[in-house]
Length: 195
Image 1 (cartoon, rainbow, N blue to C red):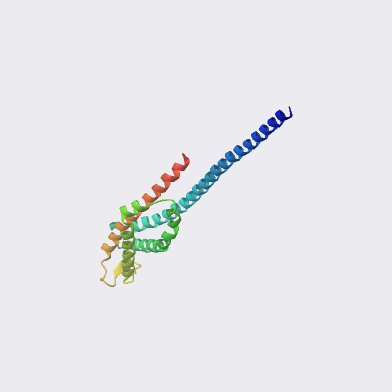
Image 2: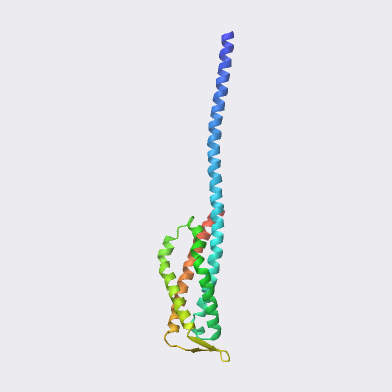
């Protein structure tokens, strides 16, 4: 009888030990899954924050480019208000452009825009924009405005500004389409999180 009690107690003890071991394994697996979910949650939150900041920055850049495009239209060329608008938009653009890589670096961790970059040949577009801005700046250093009539007086004819401004407007259009496509990629991804 003592032996049966001893066997029963051993089996109960063994059962308790096995239960503890199985429970520890299940808890360990559960904790690992919880940890993975927590990490995924943090990554999604960071991705949303980076996306929000990128979309705000891109919208500011796009607004400046729309102002430039409007000033570059043929019907607005060579009047005082258009030149002032173009100068202001150009200055805004030049202030925003250097921070483009910094502002979009965080978003590059979560998105791959290589296809969009290739589609618009973005590096060439940026080079063209900077070249055209420098040509326009050269032009402005060779012009004066008659405040009474609002007519631009060309001091030097070395720069054919109409062509440069029209080309600048076309390049600006390409940049606007590039920005809009990036914004759609970001919005589609963020919308996917909400489903």
